[in-house]
Structure formats: C-alpha cells, structure tokens
Image (cartoon, rainbow, N blue to C red):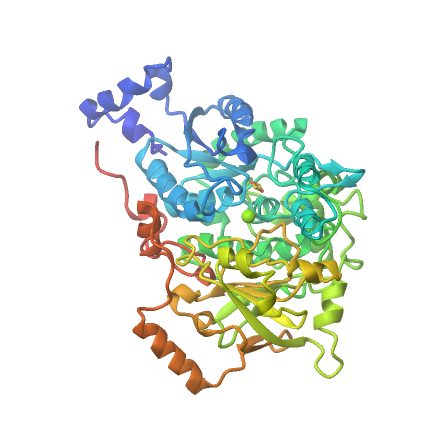
Length: 592
Ligand code: FES
Ligand code: MG
C-alpha cells in the first residue's frame, strides 16, 4: 500500500512538487532517505501548552510517544492544536471546541500525515480531536494526559471543581474567608494533569477508551505516574501498526462503540457534557445518536464508580482500583455491555482487550450487584419548555430527594414558581434580592446561555440557592437552563435544553412567577401556562426581533453563531456534517 505521505515526499510522477515538498522538511536535520523510505509519518496533535495547563504534560509525554513511533518504524511530526483550556478561556472553552476541530481537520487533511496521535485531556480537547479524526478518517489513536494526583485539604480529599463548589457555599454562608477559599482551590490541583474528579475530562477520557480509541487502561493513569509515560510509548508503537493495518476512526467509532460508551458513562457517573460531545462525534461519522438513546441505553445502568462529584474518591483511587478496564470487566461479567464485539485500536474486540481486566478495590469500583446507586444514567425530558433536555439523576442527594421528590401522592414530580434569570450576570446580581421572595419551593431558571445565546453554551445551570437559604441548610434547588453545567458539579439540574431561548425554544417564553411542573416518571417539564398565552408571548417576542442576546465580540463568535447546531445535535457546525471520511470521499487535496 502506498502511504498518503508519499504523495508529498516520493511522487516520481511529479518530481518538481516532490522537491518542493521535501526540501523544507529537511531543514532541521531530517534526511531525504528517511522521508523517502516509505515509513509512515505520524502526527502528534499536541494540545499541551502554558495556556492549557491540564494538557501541558503532553509536552513531556510526546517524547515517549515519539520513541514508540520510531521504535515501530515510523517518523514523528508533532504540531500544535488551537488551545482549549476549560477554566481559563472566556467566555467559555466550549466556544473553541469547534474552532479547534476545524483547524485540526485542515491540518490532518492538508499535510503529509498517515496517522495521528490525539493528545487528549482537558474537557473539550477530547471531543475536538475525536471529531477531527472522525471527519478526516486517517488512522488515529488517543492518548490521555491523565488526571492530577488526588488533592487533599485538612485531611480530606479535595477534588477539582467539586471542592470549589463546596467551598463557595461555605464562603457564601460566611463560614470560611477568602484566604481559606483560595487554599481549598489550590489544594485541589496538586500536580500536572486534568481534573481528578469524574468531571468532563475524566468522563471524556474514559469514553475515548470505551469507544475503543485508546489502548485499554489508558484513560485513568494519573499524569505523573510512570505508567503514563509507558502508555505514551505503547501508544506511539500502536499507531504505526494501525497505519499498516489501515484501521481508521470509522472502523472503531461505530454505532456499537457509541452504545458501549453510553453504558460505560452511566457506570462511571459521567458528565452531562458527554451526550453533547458524543452526539457531536457521531454526527461527523454519519451516525444518529439522541438524548433518548442515552436514556434508553444508559438510564437503568447502575453507578459503579464511587468518585466525586457523585461519590467520594478521586482519580488516583479510580486508577488503582482498576480504572476503565475494571468498570468494563464488571459490565462484561454482568452481560450488560451491549457490544463486546466492537473493535478497538489494537484490532482486538472489547471482549478480547479486556479479557484479563479486573477490579482490585471494590470500595472504589463496586461489583455490578452492589452499586453506589441504581439507575445512574441520564433522563431525557421534554415539554413546552424545550424539545429535549437531560438530567443526571445520580447526583440527586437525599436532601433534594426528600424535599422535592417524596410527595406520596406524586412521588417523582415537583411543581414550583419560576424565578427566571437572563444569564449568569443577572443571576449573580439578583439571587439574594429579597424582592424575588425566593423560597425552597421555587425553581431557578437560567436562559440565554446556550450555543448561540452565550455564545458557546456556558456552564452555569448549577445555580446555588440564595445565601439565606444556604444558611438554613438548603444546598440545592431545582435548576433548569439552556446552558450546560460543569461535570464536576453535583447539582441535579435539567440542562442542555434544546432548542435554546436564543433559537426561540420554549424557555424564551417563561416568566418569573409562572408555575413549572417537572415529572421524572413521565419525563416531562412544562410551564403551566395555557397555549393561547404562550402563543401571545411568542408573537410579542417575535415582534421585538426575537430573544435578545449580547453582540458578537470576535469574528469566530459571529461565524459560529451563524452555523452552530443545538446541544441535542452535538453543537456541531451544521455545514461541516456532510464532510465525512474525507480522505476517502474527497481524495487528495490539489497540489500546493
Ligand atoms: Fe481542564 Fe478540568 S479544567 S480538565
Ligand atoms: Mg467544564
């Protein structure tokens, strides 16, 4: 088989262009003999940088990846990916997921690459890279950078995000001061690596493994552990073999693989960002995945991993207990992983790749029959507030359940007065305003925070109650919104509502004071406002030019707003979806 890169470096039909392509790649010491040897050229899609501290350790790991590539007879070309830092990027890192995707598609397609190692880690880096690999469809393997070590504060585990959400409540209640608050935050970030909780990063890295796109066991090794460097080496070796076998993302990320990943997501207590990202990756492969699929396949699966925010442990504990292989071994034993025959990066099936996997600490990864809790997956809700939204029922606390879901006549439903906030600034300004008369029977609604409205979709739906209620011991109230929330948040919000208010979804019509009824058994969320009144409100809003949102601040904000789909469609770029497997369907790009 003639490798793609040889069309650049060794094309006897066009010596002129070959000369032009080859000369500049020689200029740092690589030889013509190497470039014309027919060895696969393997990219490392490098996401680490000083701006992306979660992934920064990939700068070190890339050296071991390179060793692995060379040892297996490949040549390594490392190149940068547009940075996406979850906590550092304003207005939200999610704005950049699709930008990094576009950039990487152009890079993979337009340069002499036969395969690529995807340096994944921080939340959006994983889906951005998987999406680009899916679209271009050259052999690709993912490598997690790994979570940080466990954080500790006052003798207790301090998990990324989760510790900050808890300390923020302590601060709001006046029980700790600013200095102590900052100490908690620092303690939760003790080393290189991504969030050590089961937030979006651990979730997406685990799912990249469950999809078959990483070597078994790669997702959960903490970044500083020696095994992480060893896994980087193995990953470099593997990608060269994958190029020879022509094993592409579309061979691995099949419908079966996504269905496996949904089940694994429930068992690990995965983030509410996972449906958005996996639906997005699936779209670029031409596969249909919906919120209803997440409920159908995932809701009944129990939570096996006792990890914050749903449980108590952190990333090091998860790895030591067996990581994703441990979870998959439990699911295989119980016979609930839908497709043990799905293919992984090694060419082995899931059943083969995890045949020897086991759990070494059943406190952290529970046996299937003795889970942390039953029914840990997402519910897909619908009604006149939105066509679809999701709720992570595994983070519903006893306190919340007792207050909102324990009416004997109406066991899984609650009704309350809506308090509507137009974005996070309005929420922060007004949450403690006595004029709103917020009591525990209210439902907090936030809108204008979706893919178009925010823009990019903000992680703000996990609104905390007014300080006065927190002081009375009420730590969570029902929240509904067209935004997202951090995977490290333990709030049982109804979120990712689609279509968003800015796209004139039902949320655009709700007003403070309306009654809202949520019924988890029926899977509904409705404002109890009659049809005629809703249509009057819609007409009035349309006459004003639709739901207002802030001006574009950058070119990309405007460009993306013009073409982005809703959360239930993966927030993909609508015009990009038709470009599938482009190396195969579009052939080579024209000569330079
Ligand atoms: Fe980057 Fe959590 S903020 S992994
Ligand atoms: Mg996040």
